[in-house]
Length: 138
Image (cartoon, rainbow, N blue to C red; front, side, top):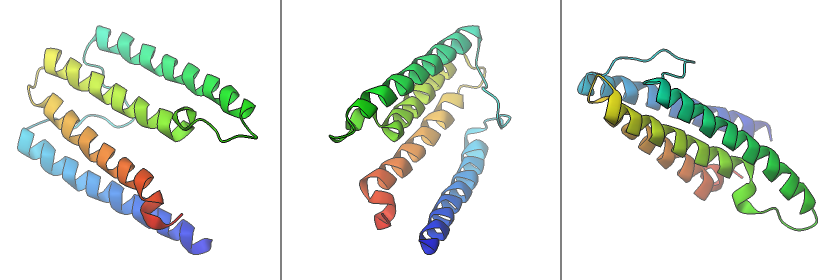
């Protein structure tokens, strides 16, 4: 079990490092400014309202899915109400909305392309984790 934890840390570290350098190259290629970390980076007030509506909706969905799957304890939980599936959907929806808002309202016309590239990379990584049971480690 100890080697599993080390392997997980190595896989996630390699992904984060690869994503960092890929983002750096994409930013340079698309001439996109680096956004501050741990910030929501809303394009405008409409984007802020939509983003918070999505966040609150997904939180309510997470809470309700908890109760639904607890009721199904003797059976298998519903796959579409599992936390990792809901979080995957959350990432796809919020980043898609960000790309649409950047396409419509951002000053730099390449901001949405950067967001879409980043979303595609994250989706590919997460799907590969889900479909291979964490690269055949589970």
